[in-house]
View 1 (cartoon, helix red, strand yellow):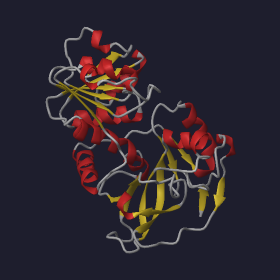
View 2 (spheres, rainbow, N blue to C red):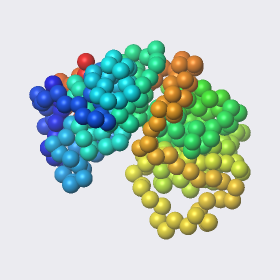
View 3 (cartoon, rainbow, N blue to C red):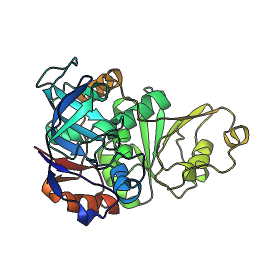
View 4 (cartoon, one colour):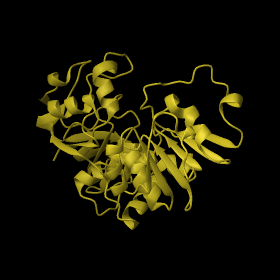
Length: 320
């Protein structure tokens, strides 16, 4: 089969298609024929910074998510031809991932889906929409009538959160650095848009959120905690601000009274939450968002764009 394999850290222009054996099935694992895969920033970090570390099982096929069909069900509860998505659990790091025509994946990280979406649209869903949906439903306990502020709204997870938040009955405020992004954010469901200058709590606004999805991270977390109503919820999911910790964190002083700080870690998807996510996607006829599509033969161009962050949305790798 055709695949992208890396043996250590490398430049984007060093990526190339290789021919490797189709994996042999084993108990507890299933063979998936991959039709498409979403690209993620973590795969760029793997290639540029992490692949030389001992905890990466090189040589490795990168890719933390994919969509496809069961080619060999092994001893699993799946059937050959079942339409599935797969993500996380060591995919593309501990064992070969989705930059290939086939992947041997743990049954626990593969989920059956029933959907009207084509393969490319479906490939935009697994990691991005699961992360957004989990943040809203588990981290923020979103309900109809809530006022949701999405901070980092132009990111892939931010855009998904706007669509899902609106579908779940919330009024959605989108925060972005540039006004030039407002029209696109409104077209996907944002009710209001504001410029994020890092001091949203100081902004005079006729409407205040009771729930904030914080995708920038510690860089703006304190400001988000000061922005919500009392009671209010802030779920910190992203680290787009490239600040990874809060120095000398003192929860008593840092978190205002009456405000709840939560987080969402996307490493533990389940069939139950995937079923709920696709129920919303199907019932509300949500069209998953993606910007660019590349083939395996275009992996250099795809990863160059991924590393620079210039796509303006999700990048999809078309495999079959």
